[in-house]
Image 1 (cartoon, helix red, strand yellow):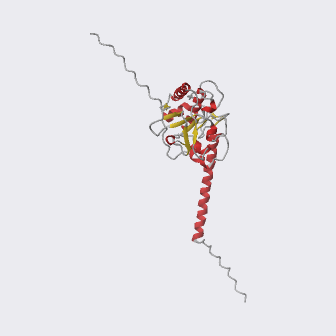
Image 2 (image 1 turned 180 degrees about the vertical axis):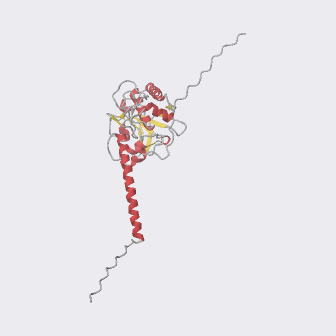
Image 3 (image 1 turned 135 degrees about the vertical axis):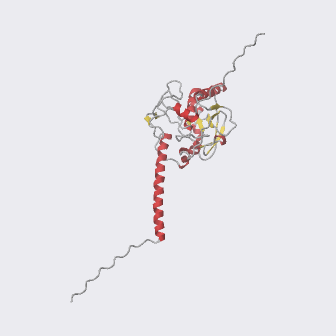
Amino acid sequence: MPAAPRRPPPIPAPRRAPPRRRRWAWLGVLIGLLATLAIGAYVGLVVVRRVETGRWEMPDPADVVTIVRPAKPRGPSRVIFLEGAPVTLSPGDDDASRGLSSVLRANHPDGPVTLPGWKGSKASWKKLVTCVRKLFAPFDVEVTDQRPTTDDFILVAVGGKPADIGVEQKRITGLAPFNGGIIPRAVVFGFAGAMSHKVTTTCETIGMEVAHAYGLDHEYLCKDVMTYLAPCGAKSFVDKDVACGEGKKRACEGGAATQNSYRRLLDALGPAPPPPAKPKATTPAKR
């Protein structure tokens, strides 16, 4: 009698991971996802850092706040305060009224610095203030050399040299925070000592650095305040769509093909209000 056929061994049911192991598996997936997002964000910062410095480099962690736009950006500061006296500033998030500077946080994070202020003549200081006012005259913003009574203003530290704040490059004449958007209450620098206190050069440098705080990129147009190109006469914020760039053309911050510095400031600040109407002269009535 033939032997009865053997039954195949039962297929074991798939084992389910214990609840703790499943939790660890999901946690691993979540960590991987967050790591991917973090790497993407960091790469984005590298690109922005390239626009800021002209060099490809990984951003210092201290730079992150200065180059990432806030989720709810505030409106622009409508007062530009030219500080010609010695001023002490500290590293931190930009707050002009408290003397806190993100530029210092990136270049001199160890503590406060005191800049020497304007060392030119009083007459040349007046010319400088007049020049900066003229640059921003088309827009709804006040330029003053008297400390504002409110806390919402842009502070321009005028004077000194880049080495005063720990910057080694001697050819730098100005610095400002920049993220492609509006940075309210920004602290910017016009190193007048590096420009021998020349009025026009210092004025145009201040114009560029302040405009960075309003979100403007460098432009490839010699007549524009936002250019690094060789001198070609008096500069202004030109009402013309042009490529961005320093030594050569490139896309503008944010990916736009062109920038119009005049229109960008007009969008940010609005047009200057019309001057008050002059009272009409009255003729004495005849008796």
